[in-house]
Image (cartoon, rainbow, N blue to C red):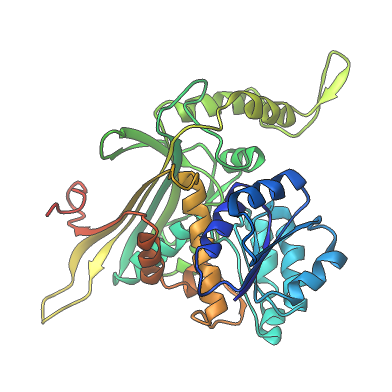
Amino acid sequence: MRYLLLGAGLQGTAIAWDLLRQVDDTASLAVVDRDPGALARLRARFGDDPRLSLHEDDVEDLTRLGPRLDAADVVISAVNYWFNDDLTALAIAHRAHFLDLGGNNAIVARQLARDSQARQAGVTVVPDTGLAPGLAGILGWHLAAGLDPCDAVRLRVGGLPLEPRPPLNYQLVFSVQGLINEYIEGCLVIRDGEIRTVPGLSELETLIFPEPFGELEAFQTSGGTSTLPQSLLGRVRSLDYKTIRYRGHCEQIRLLRDLGLTSSEPVEVDGAWVAPRSLLAGRLEAVVPRDGDDVVLLLAEAEGFAAETAGRPPSPLRRSIRIIDRNDRSTGLSAMMRMTGFPAAIIARMLARGEIEAPGAVPQETIVPAERLLAELARRGVRVECWDSDPTRPNPGPTKE
């Protein structure tokens, strides 16, 4: 299998690590990044693995990038989301499967509009294959499919430091601009069977995870559901996605928003025009920690009715999946790197092997086999807990054996 990876940052490193540990499957992995330092760090990590080639190029230079796609079965984009539509078109033109980490609904809509082009080329385009969007939506689709009818799907996901530190009790684990987008953009939900938009940072709730986490908070953020609202429209009455944080975080971000610091509209300060959002992003980069042990928390739930079995009438049922994944010091991969990069690498391998046969530009939740994906994550040391319970009672968690 021949892979082309665009981007050698944190998530790209995790994808490369996973692909290169597959001795039998990965014939070659070419990595493109414009930052020579990022490429040098990859070389230091993986040594002289003959399957790995590193290329200092800019993904905006499509002319130089094109020939590299000719030598790849699957292209994986781990660069900023705004490049992904142009990269999708290039992959289709060079007849290579394409997937990315996504994160922006408007860009994904443009990619999916290329469905007929991808079909004609005989390739598959799968946007949003990371954690959220990505794994969370695949699990939501999977849980809803086991209920008839399904009344509600709830997705709760967060990346947190194991030891929270001020000022926000948060740790930067991906792009600051992407983080700000999640907080301030509109959030797609399904309410009463209709797709609606609610504000980011709204509908604050509390939830409980096993110790040492205890009581946490969750609130609306954008992008986490990706195409899932459209895919489940008409099949569920309620769907939402919320981000998990330590208590008090939402109130702090709301204050920054209410002060206008998330706005991109320039304001005059001492005779100079400044975009508040740029200033905020710079200060977050400078002040919020990036290092330290981290954890990814995921809770996916669906409620509805179990199908009739053995002559018994349908019964109310809640289906749940919980993941708690910590960073791996032995590999140097953070929990967010693992839980974002591993799903993308697993799906890339499925495409390369022909295990996913769905030509076109397709929502990931409709074609990626959830049980297989979870099994592959478990092989990588990710603990996955699944259980069923009575939706009229508090969620008890998995039964202990």
